[in-house]
Image (cartoon, rainbow, N blue to C red):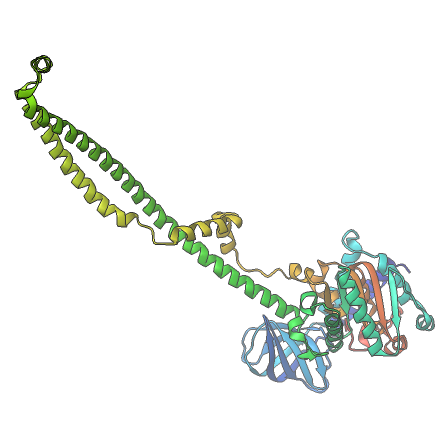
Amino acid sequence: MTATELIEFWIANLEAEQARLVETGQDAPAMASQGRLVRTTGGLHLYEFIVPGEVRLPIDLPVSLVPADDTDTTEGIILRQTGQSLLVQLVDHLGREVPSGTLVPDHAGLVGTAAARLKDILAKPDLYHLGPAERLAALLQMPIGEVETFSANSSVFTTLWSDDRALRRQRLGSLAMDLVRANKRILLLSPGHDDSDELVGMVGRTMKAGGLNPKTWVTRYELPLVSHAASLDLHELSFEAQMHQFYAKSQGDKATLKQKYDRFRELTPFLAQKDAKQKDLDEVRLLEWRLVTQFRELQVKLAGVDTTLKEFETLPLFQRLAMQTVGKNVESLKQYRALYQSQMDRLDSEIDVAKGRIQQLVPEAAVPRGQRAECEELKEHLAKLGGTKKVRELLAAEENPNRQAFVQNRRLVAATPTRVATDPLFSRVRFDVLMVDEAPQIAVPSLLAAAGLVRERIIVSGDPRDISATGQWVMPQKGTRTASETAPVPLA
């Protein structure tokens, strides 16, 4: 069968399985007690509960938790079950202690979501890539004996078969570092969250030894179950922690921008008022200069009249006759002198008024030192952001973390198969390379869903002897139970 035919085959099986789960009512509620908060990272909370011994829930199974105190129901997923201890990742904080509650699993919804993703791959061939998936489909349909001896090492499909897990993961770490350096985006699959923690630690340590900072390139989808792996702090590599830190910084930047915008709005009318006062001051000073100029001109004329009156009797006869011809004699000069003096007195009073106004306007027009430069700097900063209108839009916009954009900025995304097959985020992101750790332990539908997200290459790693031991790659026959019914594996 081709990859398309294999996907169609598994869609039919998953839909039949979903119908069977609905008919038999297997999503029975389970009592959970002795709940305690293990860790909070960003907006996710990891709780541990104790469940009855007969309850067995697979990892990544979506559940609803109804607290016994009738508070609001919250949603979450199962990350691990060890005996009666259950680790659940919840989206709501229920306090440090949760005496009891009811867990409502959604097996049918999980299987239905996986089937819908496979349908989406077939319905939108322009958005998904089945080139490398064809090689994976051929491997999944080989007889077990042939798979154990099959080896491939091409630019499209590579197998890393070995019974030494440490060696396999060391080779995966080296390949991942080389691919990151080649600017490839990698989807790293592990069958469980414990395996994912160990592999992320190995890959991070390899990158660190090679001079790369794992925090820059690697993200671990969902919360890690352990704090450290391979001497690395896994919380720093957690997708939720990285995104929370990024948006916390974004919120801080937004608060800083708001402070700058508020300061600009405060300085702008203040400086506009100061500019208006400065304009008034300039006009009054210009008026004062004109009045002083007229006053000095009158002083010169008055001095000339006084000089002429003192020297009038000594002036030559012809000069006095010439002056009288134009109406200048002793009497008229005295009249001129009185006129000039009255004009000077009026100008002097106007100059006093102007000086008083200037003294009043000087402090009103004065700008504190540095405020004009501060306003210009803020204006330039806001202009670079698109102007005050754009800044108002940025400040008014509600924070809506773009998980897709953030995950696309990471070169290596580590996740579990069920999360890749059912989380809506992975339907919108694409990768160059798919690296599968412990592939024989992963169900075929999850492998196909992940293979449709990659464009260039698939690397499959594991112990081929596990294929027959786990039975995950067994093709179900009509009327038989699917692999998801026989073991607590992805899409259980």
